[in-house]
Each structure stands twice: as structure tokens, then as C-alpha cells.
Length: 85
Image (cartoon, rainbow, N blue to C red):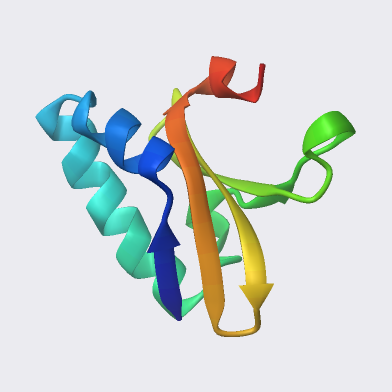
């Protein structure tokens, strides 16, 4: 699985504290092997974000992404649940 990071994702990622970054890196490894692993709680979004998916980093944080093709994903942003707004 290849991951492409948006500039918005990179900007928001830099703002995360170190412990959240470590959890994000662990979850990214899980994601690469299986984007639908139960530990990630991956789910399709609705409404204006209906073309996007999200998975959890711990309890409060999420990564929003979309599938480009079967082997490539685009990480759009990362942050707390309010990133959906």
C-alpha cells in the first residue's frame, strides 16, 4: 500500500503531540497491511465527505483519507473529531 500525504495532512501532523504521533505511526503500519483491521475502526464518511474514509488514532484522533486505487491511498488530514467540520 502506497500512501500519499497532502500538505494539509503534513501541517496538521506536525501539530500533534509526540504520543499521538507514535500511535499514528503504529496505526499506519497496521493500515498498510490491512486498511480494514478492526483495531483501526475504519469507516466510510457521509454527507459532504461521502467520498472519504476515516480511521482512528487512539480515542480522539482520526485520519481522513480516500482510496486512489487498490494500492494507493491519499491521506487528506489528521486531527480530532472536529476535522469533519
